[in-house]
View 1 (spheres, one colour):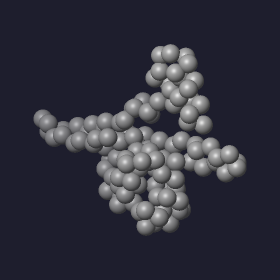
View 2 (tube, one colour):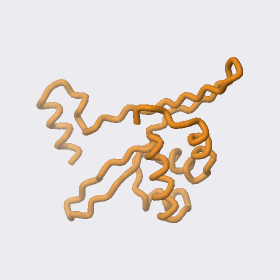
View 3 (cartoon, one colour):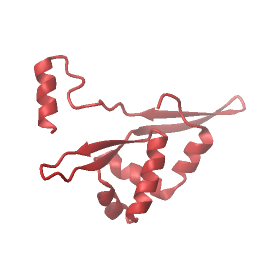
View 4 (spheres, one colour):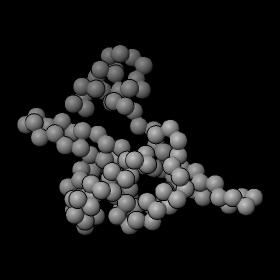
Length: 123
């Protein structure tokens, strides 16, 4: 997401307790929808609805966990690191800080062998 969402949208999203619980839980470690439902004491449909909203606003990232048995699943990680709202000269100025997440493991490695090793370790 290249542009920050409207202030009203972010405030509405962050006013939702379920969305805040998901962000808090996924800021510690990536979690699946099932794990989030259990940890945050909410139904899976509620988790998926909030996950969709958080992703639309660029506050949550999704990654697929590959399983050898073919039961791949998604895990989610908060990308929001800071939200500030400043009142200055008669206007509110929101600022959203996001964590940078590499597109794939090893992306930031300069050496091709190191990049391949990181990718292989994360399969």
